[in-house]
Image (cartoon, rainbow, N blue to C red; front, top):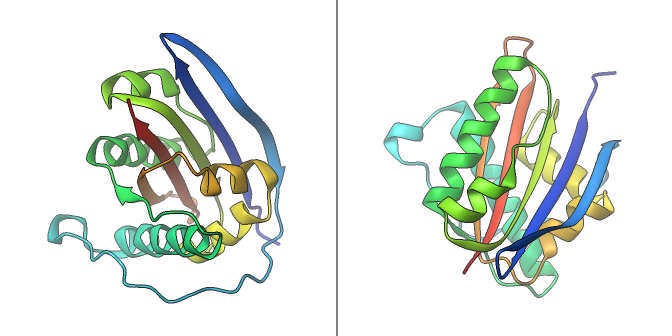
Amino acid sequence: MARREVACRSLVDFGGNRRRAMTHPLVRVLAGAVTVLVLVGLAPSPAQAGPAADYANAAFKATNERRVAHDRVRLSRGDCLQRYARRQAIRMAEQRRMFHQDLGPILRNCHMSMVGENVAYGYPTGRATVRAWMNSPGHRANILEPRYRRMGLAARKGSDGRWYVSQVFGRRA
């Protein structure tokens, strides 16, 4: 069986006093069945077209479907968050390992008051990744956090053939 893992972390800025709101250790997750609603999705830009963009867009759509199913607002794509998600997915794929990035720079550079990140590797599709996150309490909490309004999500395939995914959430200051 292929190894698949997920991890999450979030950070909140309380007037310059950053505090980790939630840290969740690496957890092995078995993907479960989730009812998925079909909603209008985001098309990749020509510069982002390809398998990685298709994977990330499927995960982006599935995340918003889960939020809507739980009476949360849809998240919009945040360009700054997207840059950090892309950079993290690339780094994980290059190093062929899953790890979190420091959320402090995201908080500051993207002008956010609250940020979070879910990471994963080894899942064959974007939807499978979101199912795994939804079956883990910490990841589910990040996805369903009602204060988040923006998201960046990126996927890259490593030389080991596995997908590495970073999902970055935020709320503007």
